[in-house]
Image (spheres, each protein chain N blue to C red):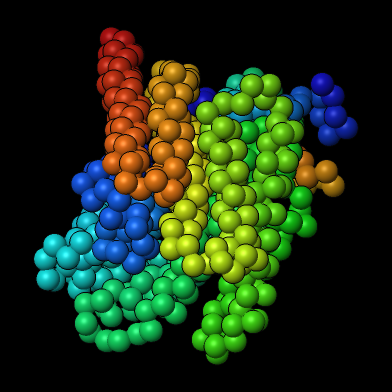
Length: 78
Length: 438
């Protein structure tokens, strides 16, 4: 799936917890430095934000008009 | 990687679980009481038995699980971290359980100092929880309908508690308050502002998340909680100023608003992406139908004056709201929260090296379905017992006891899975560590 922000997209809007978390973690395991991952959900994943910061990732989140929360994740600069 | 990314905001598993585990004991006691007391408990809402029964369900089960769930939900949904969650949970839980038991003992007139002791223990437990909860929410911006809903619901719980303390003090003979008026205020704030207020705030997150439905419309979730609370506040002020016509108008609006929440949730559920509804979806559907029946009953009684003389209608209303409504929703939530928490904590414990079991292996669908059937039978028998108390109150009590036992057994089996896997995880991590050292 592609998206203007990145080609690495996880559309987790129809998935029940903890699938979005598991898929995101698996994808981050294989995310090369300099690449970005986009996660789409219908809610703000507050626990994920904290976990990302604790583990050397940076993110930006944006709410789109249809209620989707888009979280763009990448390796934070060292 | 999965487990290395630990959920820092998740409190220890023992913090919410202690509330969940003791809650079914209270519904079991309610079943026992109904079996012993029989039709007496359902003859009028004012008998000691009926009041004990109501508080075993409303305080012992509904409020207890809600407090436990808030320990978990406040950090995850609102980012509001309780300071020292295990200490807060242990202290609140111990005082709460003792206080709730003493409150029931007070209604049943078992021993003379039950009410003052219950007031002290329950007042301290809930007051301390409110303080911790509101402190954790201090500085958290109300960026979602759920966060503002939590703040309003906690403030409403403070009012429910104060009104409850006023009533208990009056029953203990410390002061005199107009019992009918204060009871009506206590019920209005308890059922509508606190109960439905908190339920709606949680529903905006969990219904789409666990039942795979579209989200609640933004215009609804943004205003529902605050409009509901303002209406309950206005009704209370009008009750205090003795303006019965205006009280009736505002109460009708509260009933219509509650019915709108039930209809909207049913409409969303009908649009779920899941082809076959699971146990949680069925329990929520049952709750919303019972909520609509309770609203219809209230409207009917107020439209047909002769029905108002029927002494059992408040009992039927209470059964529909408490057992059919709140209890069903809460059990449905427990069946999602508990497997998720077991998975989450095992995943964190495995530190990315040992993977947690699938959530379906934590609590099987068959066990939950068995309990759902017992819960459905309890609801049906309790409703029928309002009409035929002599014949059906004791069978209804037995059904409630059995359903409570099944719920407790299901919760214990999930904890058993957690303990077994936690041991396995520790053993595997130890073997891996030895391998690295060698």
